[in-house]
Image (cartoon, rainbow, N blue to C red; front, top):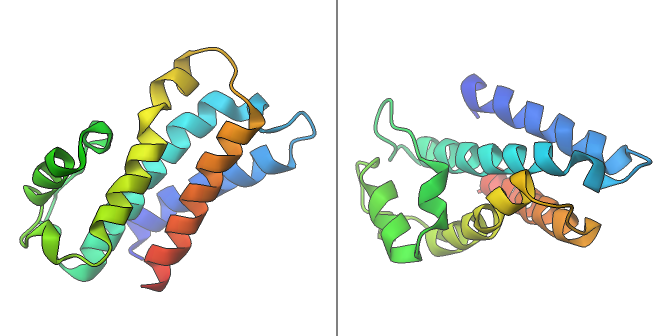
Length: 136
């Protein structure tokens, strides 16, 4: 992973670890987790596409794209690639994970407290995707 991506992922992992170790629980980190997981999802996707050599130089993926229907998200992300998104292994699954992380992002970041279960599910989804993409 390139240093520009690694630095961001390391910071996100620090926030996840701090939230999981906090005796007050992960809900004490709710807003920071919402922003961190959103940024982390985009960073993982950009790093993965860059690793595959299909991300255009200087391209950026907007986190809001991941909230859209899969086909619309795929079109928007494809505009940042030199190849068709349909050629990327497990791309639909990656988009589905992105949607799950982004779907309630604003409610978690700006709304009332959510359950620890909701936050733990999002953390586990992110960690699972991170492991999968880094080992691919």
